[in-house]
Length: 148
Image (cartoon, one colour):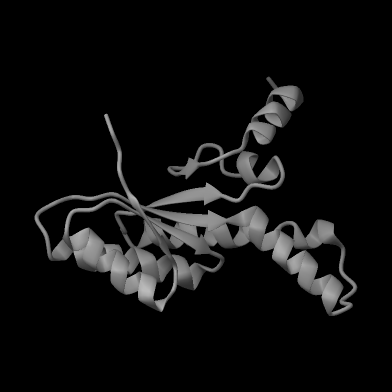
């Protein structure tokens, strides 16, 4: 089965595009999500699009946990904020979990897609959830070495 989709950046323009693509029956991937508000906005756009069509296109909302963590670590360094990268390293997971719970609680038909993994925990912290995760070849090797 061939699965085609259009990647849409989670911006104001992307919200409009995702709704319209959904209305046309086109699967979407809402990418570059770094907040719960962005995830909700994209999920709501998908829901609005579904209400305007008899088709049932899929929507994946990508929460980039590791990339978010990296950006916060870089910000702390640039702003000379004294906080351990280890503590910051939990921010992306917390945001992704919150987005996951909100989209489920509100009954959105999108699926959270974990992406931007930079560490094993960006995969392992989501095992068992009703979501998809993309991982790199390096993450797979690390996972197999850690616990085959």
